[in-house]
Length: 225
Image (cartoon, rainbow, N blue to C red; front, top):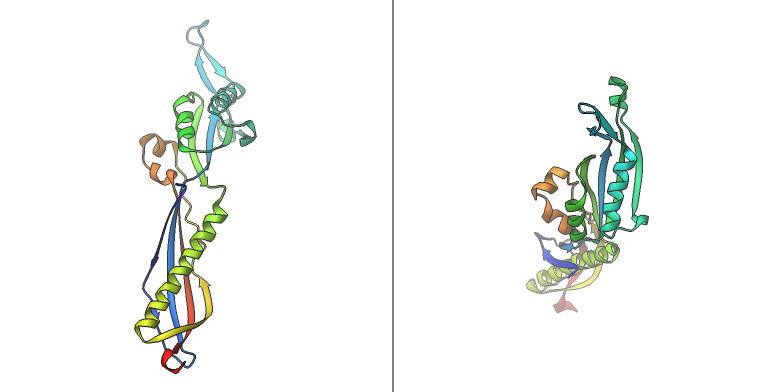
């Protein structure tokens, strides 16, 4: 399934004052399968031996490197509209030598881990300086955020009702809601080293977001009602 959701109740506090208020905290966690994975690929010109002149080298230009990467992405099913290429000059190298190498950065959005694996296997390593997963997201994240927040609110109310019943009280009305977290828990960027070594893969296969709310309810002694 696209999402695994768990709601739980964490440490609460019960306070009776002139306003007769119960304050509780409810929490929820959602695990969502990403369907938008942003890949950033660094490209750079490189030299290969000159077959016609032993001892010399021939430059493979940045356009040729870019064409090879684009061919791999399109062959893996990534639409052209989801690919963006930015020009980057290797200015540091240009200061140290007149034969500096030009570089570019390509950003593409894939829809699943299988497509990402396909690209990683097929892309030519020559001319590739980096292969990073910069972002994971889900196109329906708004709905999942609402679901997570609702579950946190439900957990808070369930706890308040339990505490009130245990003390012989009843909940009268909701007084205040404070959201304790934004709900975002983005995965970190995964470099070509981490990806190639297999570490961090669990983080790419799911988006974990946590939600927490503090809610105040007014209560009453049910015997007097």
